[in-house]
Length: 291
Image (tube, rainbow, N blue to C red):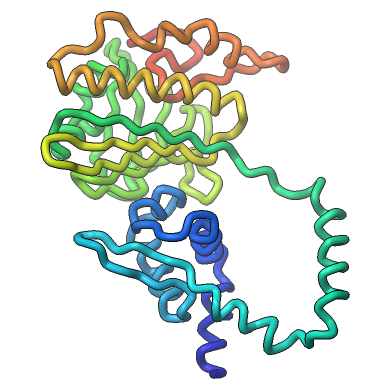
């Protein structure tokens, strides 16, 4: 019993493992890919954390076909108060907890916005992967060349297509598992792009089904609501151009992001006079359109 309890405390001591438990509490039953999309760490690290949680009996994994689904097991956590908190103490502790929550509520950390976009493409996973990582193809449908060797830990750059070599954005490749999963930080060129828990991170998840794939774009840790509004316009526009290119061999006749030009202009020019570029958009950067 003592050994089992030690494993529970060890598992709960790590903030990343607590985030995984919180995720399963909100939505029980998730694949490894779904859990990885919520964390700015490698797939291997998430697998290791899940192994510790399973050893502590806090998470159960069930294999379905080629995927493993993970489920929260609350029993070990329930045993903690049962062991150390006497029944007659519970009412008093509930009152104290309510007071603490009310006192701390104004200082609680605000969760940064998360954007998720899903599209279905008539293409192979390999072709979609190529479209996301090939510099020439990204230049065709995105208006910027995405340049990298696409290895975990490598830098990547969002370079203009005018031959200047100027990068308007970029970041660090966190995970690259061709042809199914690509994770990278995504920041403005003037922002420190160190990969950390607070980094703005994009995950591309490519899931095949017969002759089509489902492409899910998850953008987490957006700095502000204004950035969320910007990528809400930018990602659908970029993905629509990608889908058209792969299915027809041509991009859309008009750049889809032009429909959101007025909205982006309002978002970029904040009340403090600063510029807030949309990193998903080919015009990102202080000089306007460069695609």
